[in-house]
Image (tube, rainbow, N blue to C red; front, side, top):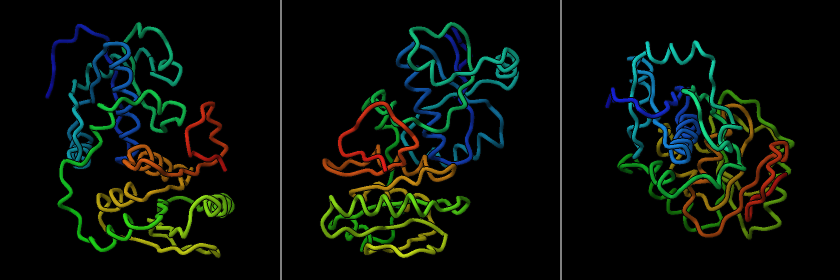
Length: 253
């Protein structure tokens, strides 16, 4: 839907390469919209719009578009929405929001309504029901590693060792197309299901998580953890992220 009535301040959300990075940008936009009563839009460019909708139409998110000419006018002012704007009292001008790494500290800003928009509209894509049953029935740990990231083995081994202290009889499910070239002292299985929707849904269903905090893996691991509907779970993340807030059962390694 394209809205031409723009009485409020405008924040333009930049398109990202992955659905999980788009989650982060969209979430910050919705947080800003709720806090400052502004309007969020995406640029109405055909190619980017089609790629975005191809992924995001699987979820319950709501989005609107404005013209490239309007976006260019905002961009010429070089006004970018940054992390500091989240904590500000007022947004005084139109801005462009390009944030794609959602900070752990900012999880507290996520309302139930925002989280609900990241629910799949349908789960008809699920084929491996036996695997899903196993994930739901044991102390499963989910880990996503993007094919384009260098694996941080030192961190992963430390995270695995830490979770081994808290979880009885865990099994690690590694969602990746990469080979694991190190010894893992835990029962594990490498999964390449061929459908990003099924993989993300299964990653969410894992009772515990290890977030691989690298450029292309971080957002998917983070959002799978945030959207996990379990009442009790552990999440391991790299201490280099240095969040100032502590979340129950989130462990810096």
